[in-house]
Length: 174
Length: 436
Image 1 (tube, rainbow over the protein chains, first blue to last red):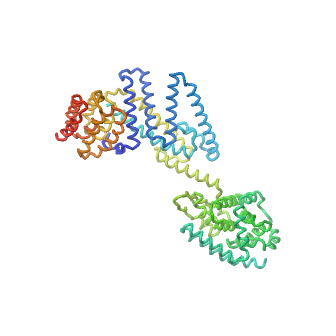
Image 2 (cartoon, one colour):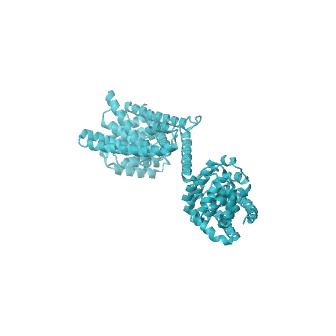
Image 3 (cartoon, each protein chain N blue to C red):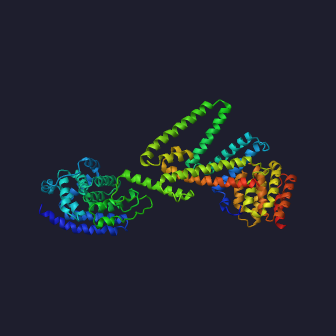
């Protein structure tokens, strides 16, 4: 790893540095929560899940609400978290499920609206665009034009995420 | 009146040619100059036909309301026979303005033919419908259904565009020009310049009108460039294409999409060879999938990694900033790990601040320091754990040699244990570090 190959990292407000700090913080928390000594597959898997969620969340938080995909991802994570909490408490599960269903209905309704407009103009790309919609968070409710813009930003953020995580993994595997 | 007609046509030809040359010069001029020219054109018109100024005004008024009429006219069958022209000629008196408008806009080839059609159309219409008739005349003169509909659509579009414009003169002038292909060419050129602020498209030559009997003007029109204005997105309707609002908006959308596809092509590696949107989308989808899988793999790897070291940002930055000090990383990490618990007991803020100030005052010339510290400042605020890392990194940032690190960190560690809450030893430590 060359020393100063990432001048962006030195910029405290760059996407990379924001993501790095948040992710490292989350990692510290995760490792602090449970002892690392245990290496059972189940625990490993749980940690993996948590780290993955942390990575996604840190990425979305670094982007804040400037992008539709980050907002959608944050909302999804929050709803999942609340759902999990509700299931553990067993009190508001119905409430959260209704909220989630209503939100899903809303997004599907939006999707229908958007799809009608997109279907008229872009006939040939609907199939491929649908695949992309499923991948990009929040892509279900976007028209093709916005979907492409969001995909571009999402790709940029994903590459940053991969870079940083690879560096961390490499660093700590030494 | 019939005898007067050819004379008018002849003189109109001259003016038409002159006016056809004018747009070429206007290409580079701004919109306001065009408007002035158009206004002068209209004054010219009025001057020639002074007794028909009221008709002009009626025409202007009628043009604006002619949208619905235009739409209605579209439905009417386009092909009309010539015999009606004879009867129409007799009613020239009522339609002088429209006819003159046609003449002014110019017929280079077979003007009488078009003029007759114009007369035929406009003869039975009130001034309010004259505009519509004028527009349909031009449409019919083309002799092509698609082009005609486009023209009507363009006329309709122009009508709607005109509504936004406060200047009625432009509207009337433009519609008056709509009667023939060449007029349409002129109109498109002027039209799109007028409606530049209201529409957004880039121009390019189109083959559509080449099918028609083209003149130099049509070729000249195809070379028009995009109108530049800071506040609007300008659209220039391509030659021969529909200029109604919907098709223009669609064209804008399509161009936006193609622009974003190009950007994505640069972003996604290996997309240069693929042409076509469907293939590109597939490629993009697979790339996003691969990136997401990489994230999952890395998170699994991170979960599997047994971190002997603490996940401190200082370690990461240290590794990035000081490649030469690789040997000290394990020790640093261990020290930081060990130092964390005792540091947690401190009131970290004061020491952080003091250390920061000291480092600032140190003037080590480490420009990396400020962003580093600024970064850590954000970390330090909410959590107490990073404070230790801050202290570590602050010291790390100052010490260049690897040998000094162990010593100084040890000192710091000891000091931290011995003198809880005191700030004085911290400044001394960095100072001693630099001295050594």
